[in-house]
Length: 301
Length: 301
Image 1 (cartoon, chains in turn green, red):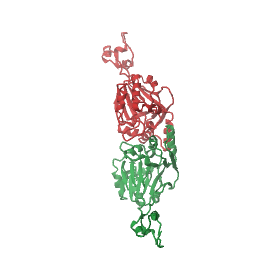
Image 2: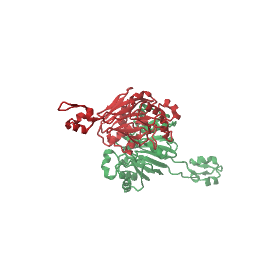
Image 3: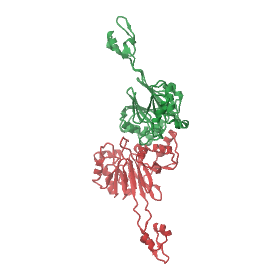
Image 4: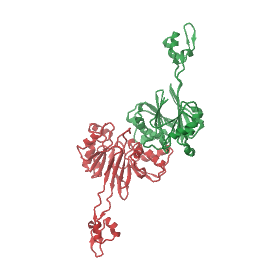
């Protein structure tokens, strides 16, 4: 699982900072999360293979999370993309894109599917044989969801020495990897646990931006490997959190601690600060394993 | 008069090339022409004073000329702009912006005025005491206008030696600069030409992008100081001009020659070419005074 930060700063794009967008690679799937202005250029700059993105997850309809989507879709068309593209996001995202395509006399070279969200409870929005994605209802000035990406448990690892010792034929290997016991010709039943090792623990990633401090999300993100939580402000601007519905670094860390996550990545920094180091320092007073996002940074988990 | 090229490449924004946008400074007014994705970052990168832009002129509603407008407007609001902003562009530009403001639950901190165009003849779209701007109807896949920016003739320069020689009081100076003759106390009439010099010749700038080769524009842009004309293609791709409704460098030069302009600036280069130098070479087989636009380039005229 790896995460490429394309942009992790709040509000307006600037010369050296980009609005929210990131690419999560998990089980060989590539998911784009949020799409602020300039995302397509950031994808190029970070050498992400555009064509592998088939699902885009939009947290909320604020410009710094969605203004780059129409440009990306247009570029996919100019590149003559043929693969379906799925957009998951709040109700309104379909109108936002379609009206722009209509007014710019554009169309897509591929099928475009919108999956609009209105629910207030966590719901599954994507599922295949290896990954499941569900929403994390957040609380912001407009309807907002985070997204939880979870690997499904993989198949068990074969203990090759053991299966050979029992003289089991290779045609049964897949069945064993799927968890079955085996009955030998002499009638003995070999329990699966004797022939296999546990698969690697499934990984999980929770993206939570933008939101006010909200303990309701803790049961949803409990024990995830990596939590990305917005931290727009430092302690000195905590008084702005309620009005703007954002969080401080310390609040993000408090969520991380209570949810017992393994690692916390902070992002969505207000551009008012000259340095982002204090975000880490303040968060670490509450929770130790903190990383700072930054545009162009790649995390390998 | 100076021109800052923010972006001059066709189609998709890329790591090192930006879609169309430029800033014309003329008589201390600052006009933004077209606004592809990333324009606000290009404005910052080129240290253009955002707040001085009060009028934006959009040639046509293709993404590479307009997708950056909503982001710029949003940023103006975040910066708490109070001055009116005027958007001139094809019918539809108002809906394009307002629907996005609505769907992103945004509003502006300033008054936003749309001046939508539908006319097929050249028309005046802006006029003040020093500058006049009119449309240049172009021919592209969608309704498109170029824009002609013309300084109005300035006041005449006072020949200070002469007016003092005639003993004319200073309270008449403005009248003389406005072109009046003066009757002295002894009845003599002093013709204005004896007391003044010609003002500097008014400058003019014609922006023509995107368009197929179109001789109809020649009377409108006749004798301008600077013509910016699109040249999407080199000769080798001339066969694409009719379908895509773009021009070659040589066609742009032919327009420049026939319109007797002083200087030609080429832009809107297709990103298929590794070097833009051949655009200049091919144009110069027809018209000598050719410049190549490039992102970040500033022309002083």
